[in-house]
Length: 359
Ligand SMILES: NC(=O)C1=CN([C@@H]2O[C@H](COP(=O)(O)OP(=O)(O)OC[C@H]3O[C@@H](n4cnc5c(N)ncnc54)[C@H](OP(=O)(O)O)[C@@H]3O)[C@@H](O)[C@H]2O)C=CC1
Ligand SMILES: CCCCCCCCCCCCCCCC(=O)[C@@H](N)CO
Image (cartoon, rainbow, N blue to C red):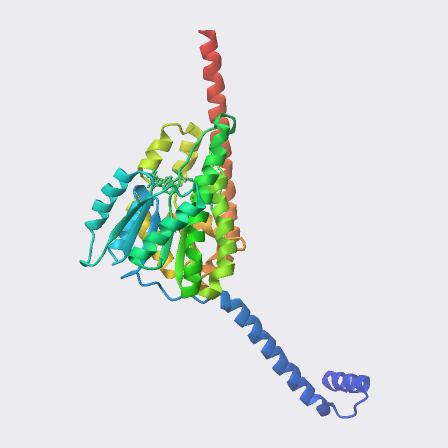
């Protein structure tokens, strides 16, 4: 007896059936079921990967908090030159008016408007809600909200004043929650919209000197992920931007008190121009990409820290799946070099301290 015959007879014996072909319908049923299961699984895998329809910026109303300076101002310009109507939000009115003039230079038609609103985005929700309402009355419902208002403090943990920890959480985190809360209901009703949170590379990796700043930027990621899951069925897309050091008045201010360690470590991913950052993050928000990174280090950091964040394209998913192990290996070398920077700086400080004492 051949092995095939023995197998079929074993099966038929076992099932008390004399002719194996009686099993054919069941086998076919099994095959069909397996196909259906595979198809459903594939649909499940693909469904989060379907890219949204890009937002048309021409004629759209874009609100930019922190729009009077640095990255925010460049984001406003980038949207304006694509035909958007802009609301700039910040505290200082003179800076706002100055920025409005700069943005207006990039008009592409004579209907475009730049509106300025002076408010502290972090202090009182009702105030933020009422100014957003005013802006919507003048320029229509908000199509895209860019949460860029923010500030930074760097210094060793024990040297940062205690109230700074609270301040940074208020401005960088709550200052993004409040404007978002003020626009979300209308966006859900209209079943469209984009919300951008400007985090930082320091919102993907905790670094020496950023014990107050990093947590406020990490927090935005948690907010963004949770919110995205809630509002995706309403066709609203969230983008988190992670820029490296960027040449702005904010960075110049931060550099005045930045520890040497923080400077040396941050140099790894260099300094970008705000125009370049604005181009990339606006493009990603328009496309509805959840993640927006700048530069090669930014790309690696984002792939490495994608965790359970949503994906918005098949290419992105494949890149993450393939590169994760490799990038973790590279990251270990970076971490080693950061540790050695910190150790060298400490030794140098101690040596110069003891030299001072001897004098
Ligand atoms: N520059 C960099 O290296 C990087 C910056 N980032 C982030 O990008 C964002 C912009 O940074 P950058 O362009 O450097 O900053 P700038 O300091 O140049 O500009 C900050 C803007 O935010 C506004 N702002 C600050 N606090 C408030 C507040 N409480 N209410 C309303 N508006 C406020 C400022 O106006 P006013 O003071 O008048 O209110 C200004 O328009 C920040 O969130 C920052 O953390 C991320 C990575 C790198
Ligand atoms: C494969 C792994 C690659 C790892 C690369 C790591 C690079 C780390 C550099 C971090 C730079 C942080 C800049 C923060 C900028 C900022 O937010 C402030 N300037 C705001 O004012």
